Length: 237
Ligand SMILES: [Zn+2]
Image 1 (cartoon, rainbow, N blue to C red):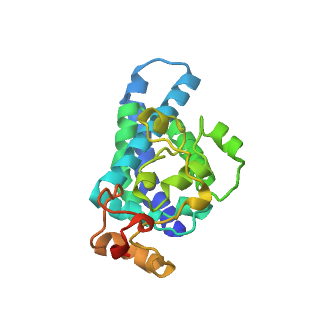
Image 2 (cartoon, protein in one colour):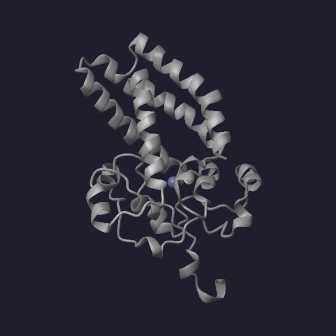
Image 3 (tube, protein in one colour):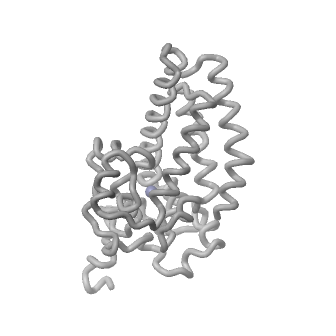
């Protein structure tokens, strides 16, 4: 899944997105190209706004049923670790291209910022999907600024009130501002995955690649009407 994703990024996304950033810089399209700022302020500001608009995209792929069909592949992983960070359906990577182009065009993201932000985001998602154990005090302190493994682990829970939290990908501040931040679920209490695909046989490479096109009765990411298995009434078990 990671290899297909990497090939999609290199063969489809980068050849579209990077030249677009070069073009918008040349033509001065985008807010930050219009405001004269010190270089480092421009880079910092652009990275922060790119991170916030990625938060918005992440909420969207959970809320919109059609987008969730692709993003669910990432959440279906039953064993959360750094490899989950690259486990995205290639379709989701392609669908995100128009959003990325809009980010670049509106914000005025230079090619240099784009590369810095993409690299920082990749490091961040490898880190917060990892199974690295950090003491609770370190998690608490770090999550004041950045997304931590325990924080993002809650987002990968099967429970709908837990998956609908911690949408940030870089800075944790977006969840804090939107009231979607939580750190109150112990890691060992979390069941990782999505309720529809509870066993390893459900999440093979072949099934995951086909899933967005064949899935039936797939609830959206908020799954408001669906109870998590552990709280389902006895007659539903
Ligand atoms: Zn998600």
